[in-house]
Image (cartoon, rainbow, N blue to C red):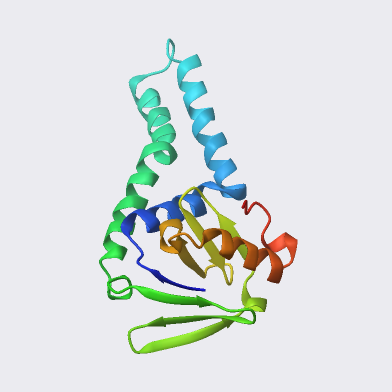
Length: 164
């Protein structure tokens, strides 16, 4: 199965948001923001303007400011040379062949740590800080085949949460 992947700023932003707001860090961000908002609401009558501003900033930090920074970073990154041309990905039984322009490489299925499915994206993690992004529209009707392939090749714990 061969697909052509064109990564957009929307895809990079979705990946950045997923990375920032899942797992322990995401839970910590949510608790911090919610705590600041609750504290602001409960202490409104007796806090100073400075304290209210500080609590509002703490809430906005992870609810508004961080996503805005991630979006700006994604927009800038999408304009980089690595994302100008489409990436061709061929999913075979023993490996994934990746090529872009004159460059090409291979990844064995054993190198895939985990496949994550989000609303609009598949994330093929190859390490703690490395991943290949595959927007769902890139499959052009082959998404079901892709899911069947990864579920057949990868152990269940590496495809947990991938729905067909």
